Length: 401
View 1 (tube, helix red, strand yellow):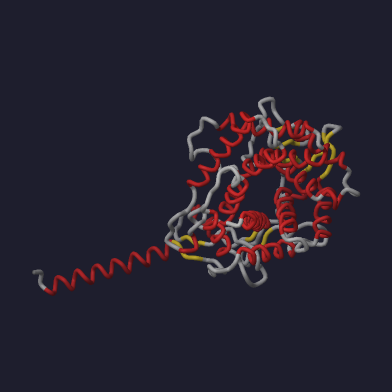
View 2 (cartoon, helix red, strand yellow; view 1 turned 60 degrees about the vertical axis):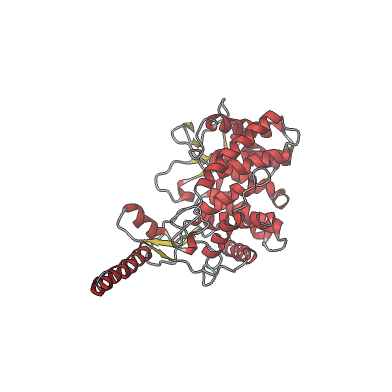
């Protein structure tokens, strides 16, 4: 039998070790979230988010792009057409889901704001959605058309065409669709940008612009019934299948816009060729499997469970949820509830920013550049953070998961 003195010494060591371990875990990840009420409903979160986005709409139709409760941080005067149109897309979703909850007169004004500041002809017969230095706030940036902006403008304006048909001729939207087709390569892929002067720019490729462009083309097809727009969309998704079919599971990017776009194609193509449908679904399955690998199943902090990023980033979770819900009719994922619960917990629920989502809900300890940048930005609230979370929660509610 060990002497009592040695037992006491060992017991003190064990207790001390447990205390130090607990302190280290707390210091490494400390929570910074205004909402830790696990029982709050998704329905209430949806209401708050819709109210937040509508409060950010200025009389001009422009949004207050981002805010930061940390008053010591000065935000740059940046603006992004894609995030503007994405916010209108989620508000349209909310109005369809809960009629009467959105001021559609303000939505109309916001749609026409983009026509006023961004529409300008390109290549004589086509219409461009231009991002300028003045609008974007990016000093020295050449005037350019982002493929994704053209796609999301079509999504927003086609989906709300009854509001704007007196101010936006259908021919203008067709001219944007024709521009997207013009940007398509022979293999089905797209140029991501068009620069004023040089034209299509192959120096940079966006992951998400292709899916956004396809979504826009499908919406234009629904409005016009012109097959060239649907044919271009299918050609683009076939390109994605061909370019990713031999990539190992987990290595395919989490291209949630491609999942949304695929679902849109299938819904308007009841007589699609079975072999083509299989390719589109196989590609979607690849993306889904990659997304599921990023799910946080266990976390040191309850706030992080269900997220798709260990540092508690909200938008990676919301966007992946959008992809999963879009493909739910084809590949069911039963764990969406945990992700939705994470978003509900992460939402700001009171004060001037009620209804918003901060960039992340966990503060990290450390000295690395990534850690410092994360902590510096974690409290910012941008309209796209809110838009994606709102869209994701609406889709989960519609599925009754």
